[in-house]
Image (cartoon, rainbow, N blue to C red; front, side, top):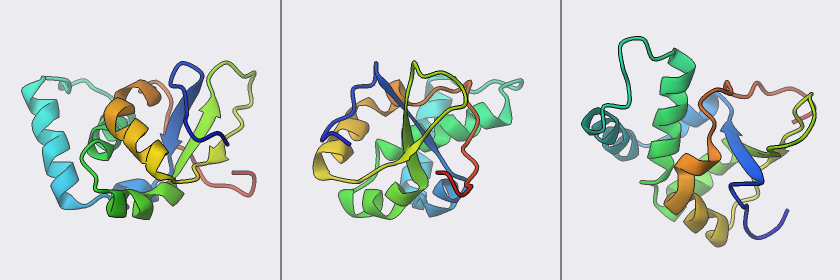
Length: 120
């Protein structure tokens, strides 16, 4: 993997354990921002809510907490043919800074959470 991920070329996703790994301070701020921006409506699908929570929470994380959640994150080439091939995220300070500033550009709310299998 390169030292940075261009959000126009790469997307990101997360495995279920990512939600359980997020610290409460990041979740609280993510919820606050989603409410203030009225991004979640009554009919917003659950998968989209989960993706919004994770992507917004990533922007709030300290580097130490990012390192804890990084094993639950993956990236993929946006324009690849199906089936989607994903790579586990290799954490670095540069990737952390990039995700922190641009998390919303990496996560596609139309793509559901990843499910771990032997090929991840």
